[in-house]
Structures are given as structure tokens and as C-alpha cells.
Length: 329
Image (tube, rainbow, N blue to C red; front, side, top):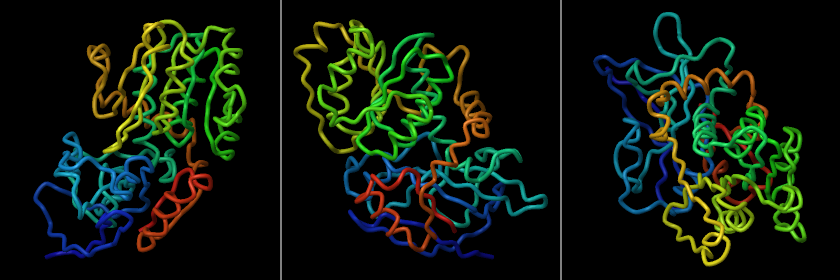
């Protein structure tokens, strides 16, 4: 017996469509009915804009994303639903935007009653933010610069403030996001502010930030972080640029100040943490932090799945209006 499902596909640059798929029961798997899906603005915009690296594997660590990043592409990894079984356990799945699907029970994350669906859609981004903070290795009282205040930037900032940073400076072009960061306790600045680099130096006693984190997905943000870091400071680059090339000026500050440039990517845990941390422990911590941080307030727009084209066009054309967009089946 087959069941009809609706799934979102990126079919070409600038175009998505919802297609019907016939599902057949699979041994050892459970049927999940989606209740809420989250769009990962950074990664999925690369797919929407046609900026994914040709031929790259989607994500070897997730079975639901096996295959190449090629059109037509069924992609996404934020799906909250309920198991179609006695008891109706609410679950989170790293699964594409699809309203009905079969999944291995071992790959589902059971959601406790205190975690709402609206909070659960932030689980992958909060795990990403935890990995960034771990990779940055910031110590108590140090100053940190965060460039980019999308969802990952805001969650990273919230975690840094909880960990006891001395001063957290955030740079973001959109006023809505700067306001949210200010409420967290950040010193939020616009990249258009006159003498921005001098202002960052003043706020850090002339030293520059001890560490910087770039989640802007922009070349200019990466360069700003490099230019303002203190001597032997660390820059964590958490953006994914896809097929875009990035040019940097490395002849001055980067070389003379002995700066460290570190890549952070959520599929792995830093080897230095290996004896104590693994992905399961990090994910469990993120799950426990969801009701504490309550990132559901960052949801700015909701669209039914069949209007997904409008959702991606909004994110692409008007980033100043949006923070987190969700799809409802």
C-alpha cells in the first residue's frame, strides 16, 4: 500500500516546486507526519540562487541528504513532526521539506513536552552555534566580534553571552537584527558606521577582539574580522560560500599579527574535544537549551508548503524583513 506525499524540489535557479511522491512502507521505519519545517536561509539560498558547487555530495552524515547537489534537488534538514504510531511521539528529523515520510527511528530526535515545534525548528542552527562557540575557544572575560546576525549569528551571540564574554560586538547591516542583538546584550553596530574599524578598536581598549566569528556569508565581513583582530587572535569562519570565490587581503594584519583562521562546520566535532564530546552530546545540549533560549521569537514569516516559491523569493529579495521563515504542511 502506498501513501501520497508532497515534497519540495529546487528545480533550477530561482525556482522551486512541490511535487507528489508515492511512499511505500519500509521495514524497520516509521511514518512521520510533518507539522512544521524550517528553511535554512544560508544553505538553501545557495540552492535557490544556483550557487551550489557542482557535483558536491549533499551531506554524507545524513542519510536523507544522500546524493549530489544537482537539480532537481530535494533539500532541507529541518522537519518537526509526529510519528504515525500509538502515542504519537513528537519528533525532529533532519529531513527535507516533505509533509509525510518514512524514517529510521534511530535517526529521529524525540521532542520533550517543554520544547514546542516552533522552538524545535531551531535545533540544527543551535547545534551549529554550539559548534562555533566550541571552535572559538573563548575564555571568560574576553572580547568577541560577531559579524552577521542571522539566526546562527544571534544564537551564537546568545551562547557567548551565557559563557561570560567580557564584551560582545556585533556587526550587521539590517536594523531589525541589530535591535534583537542589542536586547541580548550585544554592542550592535552597522557596517556603514563611520570609522567602524576605529570604533571596534576603541571598544576593545585598542587591542582588538580576542576572537572573531564570521557568519555573514560575505567577503566584506570576513575581511573586517581579519582587519580588527588582536595579535594572535582567532577568526572562526562559519559561512559557506558555495560556488562563490572569496578574495582577501592577507598582506598586512593577517600576516603581521599572526592570526589564526579556523573553519567551523557542524557535521563534525573538533578533534581536540573528541575525548569528551561527540555529536550526540552536543545535540542533546542544544535540545536542552531550546526552552531556555526560546528562539521561536525569531520566526518572522510562515508560509504553507504550496507557497514555498513566495517564501524563497522573500528571503532572497528582502533580507531586511525576515529572520526565520517556516513552512507549514
